[in-house]
Length: 411
Ligand code: ADP
Ligand code: ASP
Ligand code: MG
Image 1 (tube, rainbow, N blue to C red):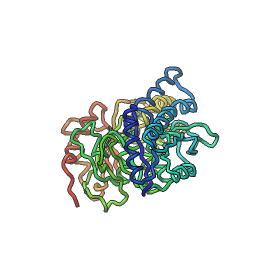
Image 2 (image 1 turned 30 degrees about the vertical axis):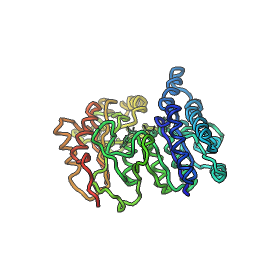
Image 3 (image 1 turned 90 degrees about the vertical axis):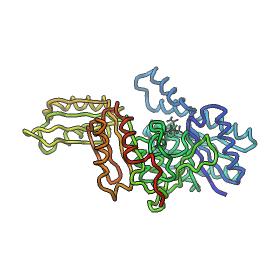
Image 4 (image 1 turned 90 degrees about the horizontal axis):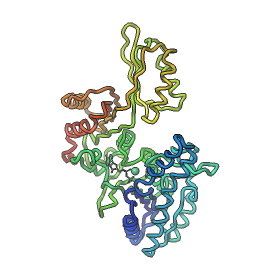
């Protein structure tokens, strides 16, 4: 007998028919003698619909009220899932985040889980119940409803699995595992049997939304066995997130290509090339709680230099306003903004032991006439910023040049 946390995403609970299918799958595991905690997202499109309603009413709704609003999506699906399970003759009980007491900080719309009171869940499991928990939500110390950021139900599932020391956390979604890149963009993408935790962390942080990054962080911190599977197919093995590089069955140098259009670039032209200039530019940006990702400073000529950095697209206008305010103070010639960029990244732990990966990537992009605007590298990834209109082409070209469409060698 195992304790398994099973999470079903929005498309997996999009209709009553699909909720019934979820219930059937859960019932089969339960019949095999396993204890099951189900975590569900809102029905597909529901969170967007609710956010749209809020925006129709107010340009900048109070984040506390936004959380009260968007958390309702998951409250609907937990109740319906519990009913569907009961209909199959199982005993099931639903819980909102507040009812479980998933304690978070008070950062509305992007709260972090601090603690989970697992006593009630455990007692229900011991009594033979299937426990159905709302993803994406919690409550702060003053009992305000909070949400965990888009895609946050993954994090709820992994955090509950960690709290209950579950044997496995299974993320059921609309693809049958983690692929070498988004299979909706590259048809030839291949499912990975395993991916290391470190690579999954990079893929998630660089835009692969198949798992929310915080769920991967949790899995790493608490060593939660994590698997991504299809909710529409039976019997698939999905993708296992592994902790040991040595246990990988597939040994590719590159594991995948990630991409996102969530960033925007700001360039400050003609700033004096003197100590403290980076601080003078980025200090006010940081003070406004805006995260900066890539940074490039050119070699100065004539005592002047250009300085570029990227921020999340949602922070673009605020960051531009800040820079326009500091422009005269730092004697910059001009501040330029571009929110039509994309970041494409090549990820793989195998890169550590191979040279020439970056030049292969740059050559492949050059051959397609794709101009690279910014580059950043680490031991296990290379990211480039390009014009967003070339994003899909760049992903395809990189996927091909690193032969990710070919079966990986087995060890
Ligand atoms: P859910 O609603 O089940 O949480 P998401 O839409 O959040 O599902 O995540 C699944 C989607 O992630 C897939 O439909 C796919 O388009 C996308 N995706 C992006 N990168 C990858 C990847 N490397 N492997 C698999 N899916 C990916
Ligand atoms: N319903 C939330 C969202 O759409 C959380 C999730 O699906 O994981 O972002
Ligand atoms: Mg998701």
